[in-house]
Length: 174
Image (cartoon, rainbow, N blue to C red; front, side, top):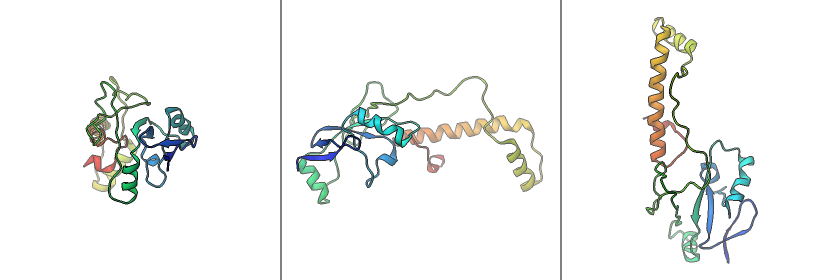
């Protein structure tokens, strides 16, 4: 066996110990449908088909032939290395201690300043309070409740970021 895997886009061989790229999106990293790319161009070619909202390629290094053989026999877990870009504090370090590197992707959007939209559907909130407890609800409740939702969302995003994810899950709100 001379190659480790094949590129998911161009089908070229990815050699053992060669640099390859993975999509950061979890659906592209599943064991059964995992996608591996020989270059950033091949990674970019899969984006129109997959329609990711926000994605980037992560540079990795293929295992040695001995590591791959051991993994196939169930003796060892795969060895992956993620290299870092300077000043990237948002991504946690990889398991081997090397910081992560975003090869491609949009910069995070800062929280907008100034007037903010109400995040709560007024009619649903008022209906819920009236049907559950028989109380009326003032319009002034919507703004502080929206601020509370923003605060909870910011905490959940931080938890997802600490776990190295770009998807906020229900468990991030615990």
